[in-house]
Length: 460
Image (tube, rainbow, N blue to C red; front, side):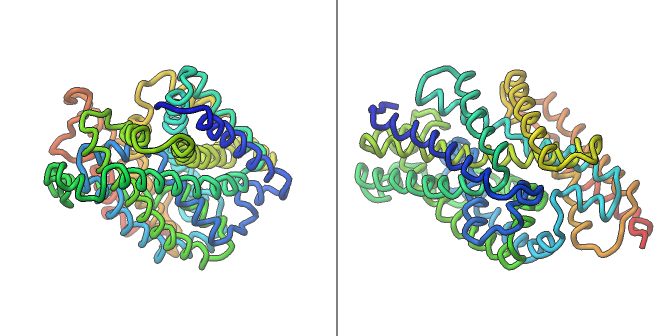
């Protein structure tokens, strides 16, 4: 991007500002519960801002979907997800908040046992790896400053790591408030700039292929449904659970998600419309860079810098949430098994450091960390979904060995399906048998186990 000196001033000021803002929270409260869950006193506005910002770390991928598929990209990644969000808000939020747990593994430990809880811990840790967002942040920082990817990754990791390690979840929430405002301001400015530069929406309506402007596009209905079912991830997402645990009441937990749906819709419209403008105006652009290309052409200096800040804020808000959640899981659920007498605050801080190191190793070893985490995450969802829902909704204790068997069946079948897809891959893209994603095969396998053992699954 063609940036002026004032743009760089804004970007540096943002990075310094969130560090100071995050460190400010370290003086508030010293108990384990305060560090891990902000004292379980999360207010409605704080929950909404933190939950909304956590969900857009793959903003560059959002642009790519709009570029390639048009409106159907929003259908698969937005509209169908709202339904699952609504289910969580109305059916699960109260139960999760009232449980007074700290992690998903706690639910499995209470209703099932140590074996399934341990496997659940490993899976949730993988699902919340911040590696893809650390990499994305490094790419954007390098794109802006041109200082090299490795140094950019280190800078991004260091900034987030310092304030998260110091202030815990309260720091995450406080910084998310600023990032919430920046993400809407940045993309709001981009939309206004596009309208001023190109005119109203008839510009892209007349230029884009008709399929880009339909709810199905060029994708088969079954493909759209398969993509949309990925929203089931929400029902076992540790960040969703964490914000419900931290809420001041079950009403705040429920209403926080309901309000978040509205704000997600608003931001989805901003990214969709600006993405369509960019696709129509710059059809030969790199799909993952369309928002930057559009900003470079329609925004004046200073505002252009603020837009860059908004993208950094979007990615960093997801990265710091995943980093803290992963650190909590590592500290409480894994290190806590070895050091049961050590304070959870200390163990979580060690877990944050370990998670940063593990993430950097993943980034060095693999070219596409996002793809790896996505694949491992889908395996995790298939194994966790039914046990977690049973643990939350059932009043009975479950047989730990049977629950574990269902989880292992899901992991085994989904991994086999995954390997088959990789063997048959075309140009690097897995070709799964019958076009069915591994997650759904794993879900069916675990469901079969629980159906066949239903008479002995519950033990009281």
